[in-house]
Figure 1: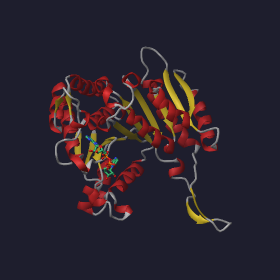
Figure 2: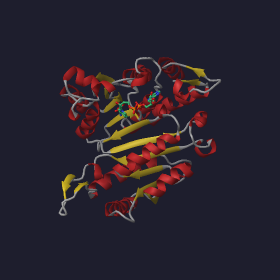
Figure 3: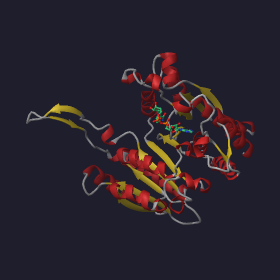
Figure 4: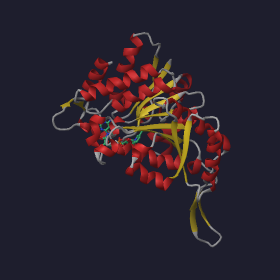
Length: 359
Ligand SMILES: NC(=O)c1ccc[n+]([C@@H]2O[C@H](COP(=O)([O-])OP(=O)(O)OC[C@H]3O[C@@H](n4cnc5c(N)ncnc54)[C@H](O)[C@@H]3O)[C@@H](O)[C@H]2O)c1
């Protein structure tokens, strides 16, 4: 079980340190983790002059999974675009062929007040958004800016999906819907498109319907993206797994994450065809609180649970980490970002202490 550890910038090293303590509990009990640390983002630019240097590429290619903190910071904002920390992220996604982005939006009942929605609308929320990450209008060619036949300037992009791209993301989503079945019920998958207007997504829908034939245990529904954006606010608990293309997924997964009220709680995974995965919190490097031991490490710790579930196929260990987090929240421990009156305020490392103890 080779894990490349990329702490990155800002709060990255602080939250990764806590996640490693949790994995260390499992390692001491016999799980054969091998950790290798490497720089990414600004940290890598400082050391190697590139946000995703060869040194890091080698370690990531050789690993079964990558655990990432976050990248970026104001000190890097004026670098040339190809050298900026965020390019390190794009580089690693491309290099490892990470086409499936999994973003859970889970609201722990103890944190229902952190959401801007009414507690009864969001309590118990548990959605998984599966976003295709390497195709769609973000990568389609041709693209650019030009002067058109009428002599007017215009910008243009191309929305395109190949059948193989839709099939493989549909399989990932159906498999997850299967894994998330409860009490003998069918799995639930909602495919989001704009098939009434865009041929690319009409095609998407057609392929998803075809893949569904292989998954009789999953109930497939379809929704237009504008309605999906509305339904996520109106009645988010109607959803279990959602699957969609790159651009719609970009927007919907951010919307869904805000339902929970705290960005410090949200994990994410990006997988390739061999289930190799990059696991990271959904938030950024939070330069405003970096180096102060204030960050919430839970998103990163929950990312390690996703790693155990999706790359290492160890559901029991994943659930154990998730239950440890639940226990600590139920015991009223809170970092500053999720703190409420009457709770026990803890630092980043103290939150790590509590979760390690609850393991
Ligand atoms: N995947 C990534 O590495 C990633 C993602 C988004 C942004 N970024 C980069 O991060 C830097 C900061 O971006 P931003 O400020 O827009 O977003 P951010 O997510 O870093 O921070 C937004 C706000 O949330 C708070 N926050 C974030 N994570 C937290 C945590 N774990 N605990 C407590 N509070 C937390 C921050 O303090 C800040 O107030 C930028 O350089 C940006 O490019 C990186």
